[in-house]
Image (cartoon, rainbow, N blue to C red; front, side):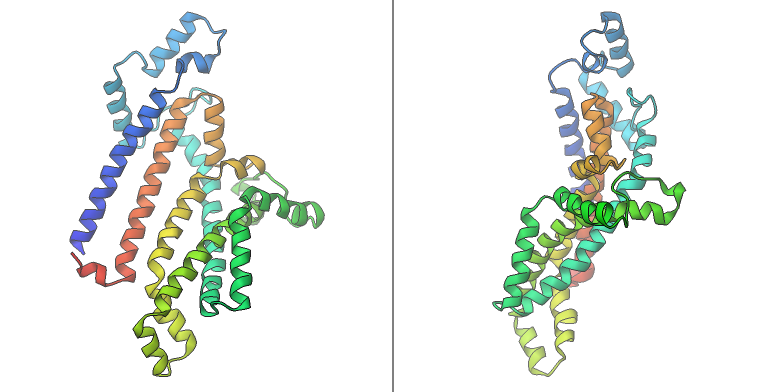
Length: 315
């Protein structure tokens, strides 16, 4: 187990190092002068030069890279030139929206997808399997923001049960804040549940054909015990992989739905920083999201060893 953990930690650290180089390089090769883009084409040369000095653009490339990385290690994400506040404060302000939204959407996705995948795998080739996988195919094809708009029309505009958009803040109360996240969470969860249900079905079909499943059934073990205790546990590794990827996507990839529903989350922060050419916000937030993705994948790898004891002893 120690060797497995050490190997995964080394892979995570190397991934973060490579990602920092890629993110910093991508920002550097963007055409145009960042200071000129931020101030506009009508800015004076003195103002542009002053902003370049403030941003440290007059320093050598390697110096700026290592200085940026050293600040990231202390969670110093720099200062936004648009909002004139530390980027860390912007991230914490937006994270209280994006993180609960991602957790709720991921929980809904798992609660819908895993039972549907098991149900469909058990009834392979039957009408129920065809209907459930057909619905999953539609869920994969339809964009999540379209689901969210449809839900808004039904539950907000027509039934007046939840707000149509915006976020009142947690200071307004837990229930009002959760009500504003319900529709976007469902809109995000449905396409992800469609993907996860298909993966669960495939993994379950592979496991249900194994000899130990037939042996358990031959011994007269109850159907639910065979499905949930023996089959599902051995089919969880691909399911956990998709869950980890989905959480990273739900945390960082909600730019469209956050802009459609006016949610002040991380996705909208990145979109606003790109449009306003606030490059320090873009590169710091993107690197932070990369670190979150790497951390989630590391936790998923560790969960493999918990689910499958063979990985703890395999070289």
